[in-house]
Image 1 (cartoon, helix red, strand yellow):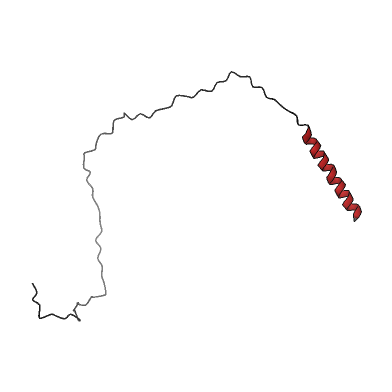
Image 2 (cartoon, helix red, strand yellow; image 1 turned 45 degrees about the horizontal axis):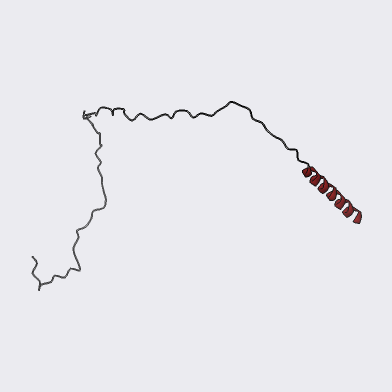
Length: 95
């Protein structure tokens, strides 16, 4: 058990030393760009707002609709309405 712990710690220390050693000597790279390229923006396209509107259509179309007749046959017959709780005020004259 102790032997496994010692091996683990030794392996961890060895990996840590190698990682630190790898970061000590970074290779410095330089990039030299030699080009005659010069970016240029293209001319913007403008929308033509001077177009004439279309001619107005003054003709009236003849519209014909075919509406079928609808006959409703109801079995329910409504009864007449009678005011039951109406109290007529006799002291006041209705105009």
